[in-house]
Length: 195
Image 1 (cartoon, rainbow, N blue to C red):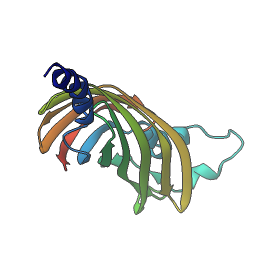
Image 2: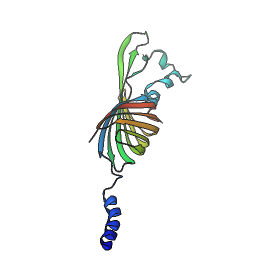
Image 3: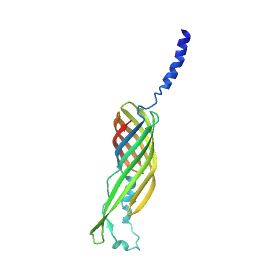
Image 4: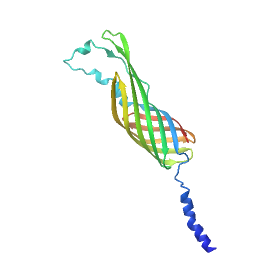
């Protein structure tokens, strides 16, 4: 009897370890949301640099010019894999559309410039606290931004950091995070689905 109790006492920690309490309840999730101020898109598409001319160049006097730049904002889609309860790897995609009216030198509208940017950011997320219906996390991502406008193409690296984010809900959940970086400043919020 004593021998059986010793064997059971030795096997109990092994059986508890085999249950892997660190495994997340859901292994994957999709998130869809809207992000904050598109910083890099404003720099590329905002035309702030067009107000500075070469003093010798007079072509701008009779050239087309643009009106105010309008942006839709960054819509996001993200796929995540939860390796443990505390570590998640995600790939996020953000899409922004931009348009600007064009005018001739007399002030008559003669067209419109259209632009598009795609931000692809692999992200590592650390979940500080995780329960069945609530979590608090931080994340960091490094990726690329691709854009096109006026038949020109650009690509640039991006870094995004979310010092704090939360999720609330179970299978269908909401999320909100405070974020800063090259792609955007401010927050990102939306809805997700775990499976």
